[in-house]
Length: 194
Image 1 (cartoon, rainbow, N blue to C red):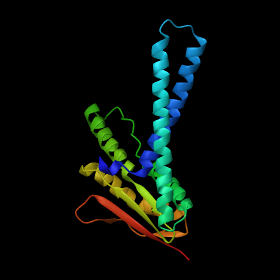
Image 2: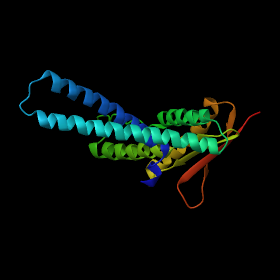
Image 3: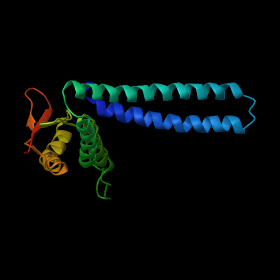
Image 4: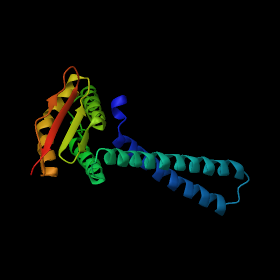
């Protein structure tokens, strides 16, 4: 669980929560004004709770972005590298997502359910994929799933992921993904081309 707790997942979750609470709060507030309800108090409480969630998720989003900005300034690095890291992580996660294949008539439902579970576990490990760019180097890290079938599916993607990373920003040259000792984490480092 701790490997899913990275800044990219926090930004995505808080932005999604902020957007949904803004939309639902505006809709609830509009309905409260337009309708004459006998139970007006619960709707007002709902609007207040939604506003609290909206403020809280906005604060988390702002705090995460400001913290990343401060860390980049402390490292004498540019904030645009942080934006590039976020965009690259998003693109690589989209590229590596496995799609469930529809079963044919010959395949049994038990086999397809097992296959879908394997693909679901492989897709869940995508949330641990991060790409971080710095001024002179970059690091791509991915923690693979525990079961062997999902591990093999993702491990086959690593050379293609390296090729996509090199094509995404051609000013950085990524090397092969290397498995870190005593873990399921694979890491690739890149140096900036001159």
